[in-house]
Amino acid sequence: MRRSPVNIDQAKAIAIVEILAKLGIHPQRRTADKAFYLSPVRDEKTPSFWVDTKTNRWHDFGDGRGGDAVDLATAYLQFTREAHTVSDALRWIGNMGVVAYEMTPIYRADEHRNHDDGSLVLKSKRSIQHVGLIHYLDKRGILLPIARRYLKELRVQNTRTDKYFTALGFPNEEGGFELRNPFFKGCLRPKTISFVRGKTPKPEGIHLFEGFMDYLSAISQLQGSGLADDAIILNSLSCLKQAIPYMQNYGYRVAYSWMDNDEAGAKATNIIAEFCQTQTDLRHTPMNKVYTPHKDVNAWHMHKLNLTL
Image 1 (tube, rainbow, N blue to C red):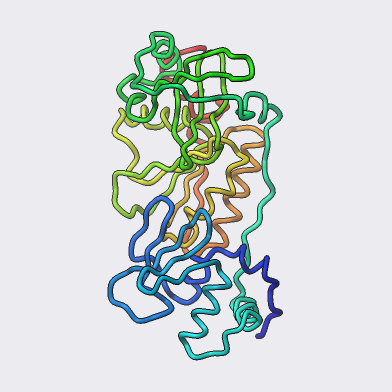
Image 2: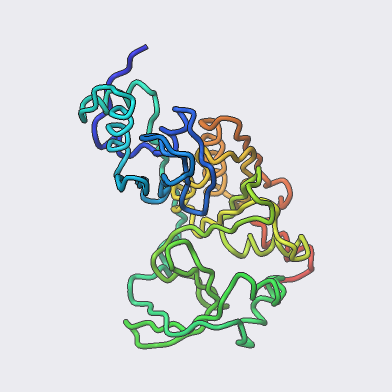
């Protein structure tokens, strides 16, 4: 069945990894934000074609070409000796039946309360040593050796008030940090997800956590040994859409969600379930039953340790 051509903005929003998967072309290897392929636009035996899954752009190191999804379609049609104008590319993409995955952003009531408005500046970073932060971690049930593996002690200046404070910093994929101390919960821009590689190379599972305290709580329950599978820490439900390229056509078989037991967490769980249904052989397993009736993973972990804030 022939489909209507998409417009150029719709085509550019479609994940390149999705287009390649429709062609039966899959990554030879993958990092947190790049997928490496044998080139689909020329003959080669060593993968030199990569897709940046964050920016949704490609580059072929073999011949120097690159661009967006429309550029890929025109290059592929030219390689296969088909008509390859932009109009041809849009019609071809439309006939493939691939669509950009859309989702409604989720925000909590206090989502923006302590987020960085551009006034926070990182002044220094070191291994965790501050007694107050160590005590805070103890109260949350996170052992210092585990915390030091994933967190840093940050000295931050608020240029709007000209005050300084010290906080735990959890790095994300764009050079920003989630910030926590007993009195502050916020972030240093940019705000985005964090990706943690599992112990198993090319694992079959991916775990999605709302925040890093939940992730560290799960690690703590495993006696600090770490997850075999990969993990994405959203750092905010508003960042859920940014996790999609990491899961799309990567080959994961199971997506485990560890969202909060509240209305916003339930919405996020449903969105993850709906996304998994669009993927071949990706099963969704919500983990909420593990920590019900507690609000989140960290509250469950603290309960097991008989801790209270």
